[in-house]
Length: 243
Image (cartoon, rainbow, N blue to C red; front, side):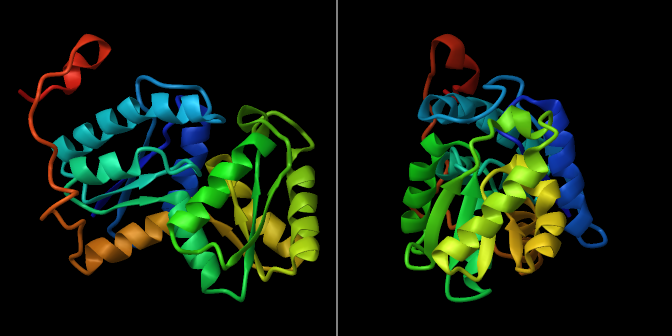
């Protein structure tokens, strides 16, 4: 089984970390290919960043289809381009926010999300509602560390850990959801420090895709998620045309 894990940003060091976290949970016989697009933002921290990341995601889905990928993980907590990716892919596509929130809902009455910047908290709330999990989400909290500084700030792990501890106490939640793929490698450490389950969406999404493929399940293609009709695209998007 080949699972393609797409980090929608172009920071290759973060993609490498994401790949390691996905491989750590993948079962025997599952190959994880972690990739970044050739185009797009270095990090995703705004609606503009999300919008401009989608062509690069679709580029990688097309490459995955040519490679025979069985399923895909979208490794950004905003779950950008999910509907488009599900149209374009043959196998299942799972986003890390979707996966992490569903997984956390199995672990108690409620969960808290700890993410990077305050400006992204609204998107997390929107996704919780979209996935039918708003009643489980007791709070969304920002640690105010920019995405790229997760790799460079020597205090990042401590700040995020304390933010998780504070979120649980403030919200009375039973679990924490890490709200950025760049936090994936902190999951075990934070869980041991705060004494509560901490869900990394990269691991959760990888295992959900693996399970769906094992069960022979894929996105339904009868209506909305059928392949998009062929047409011409122009300008920078000319390469996406199928007419």
